[in-house]
Length: 350
Image 1 (cartoon, one colour):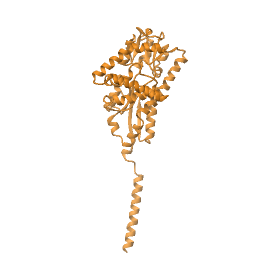
Image 2 (cartoon, rainbow, N blue to C red; image 1 turned 180 degrees about the vertical axis):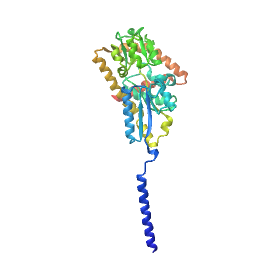
Image 3 (cartoon, rainbow, N blue to C red; image 1 turned 135 degrees about the horizontal axis):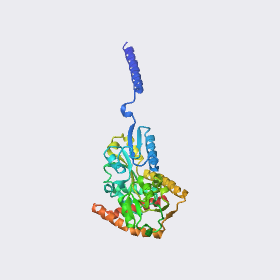
Image 4 (cartoon, one colour; image 1 turned 30 degrees about the vertical axis):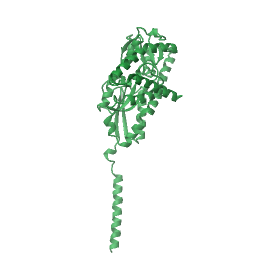
């Protein structure tokens, strides 16, 4: 009798366990299993090539998390503020992720600005990798308030001129050129031009109304803001290249489960810098093709002429090093390291 009771008890226990398991499987997922939504804010419009790169990144991250992470993209400052406010919005937790130009807040990121110095630039994929490695080494303190995802850079900078081409240093003398940052302004002034700070949205208008004679902007940016159509002559140089960055709010990153952090980390850093650089180069190619289609002359500086420009721009380096030294950092060593990294990744690409 006791054996039969034990058998009945065992059977009932097994049935109860099976029912409990079925109920658990059928129950709604707990709230913490809902997708985590992150907001990514930038100043560039959704039609921009750089915005499409951000879309590609967001979709890749979402796919690798199995949909557990959702990234909402907002372009054209849809969430408020101006381009220069994006960094503070991320730092203060107004948004989770931001893509912007450190040059908009130049005083906050002096170390990173080394890659804005004239003629540091090169091919976008090469310089992007060098910048990401450099910024994580020398810019660690100035980026400590956020979680950096990637640093990257555009390729060739272009002088887009309305009425005449630029082929020699003398051609720049006294011309009003739209500029985008303090280092860009200092460089143009050293080369004999008159720098005029103007937001990117107004470049074409400024050219059309003769407020400026020309503008410095990468091909892809010039394409997005109709600068190529408004200008008539284009000269490719490495006179100035902005730095670009995608950062995440520290708390937004810290609150992620460990496996989702791994996905973000796997889609960050040097690999992503190279990928963004290659995508930027594709955008630049479309911009250059537009100028060719319009039958605009596209010039490049000869080696001898570029040497003259480099010599004229040397005071920009000297002043940058002096300012960085005053902050307790080794300015000359940082410039040399930036140049070494560019050379390193250039050699690796061959």
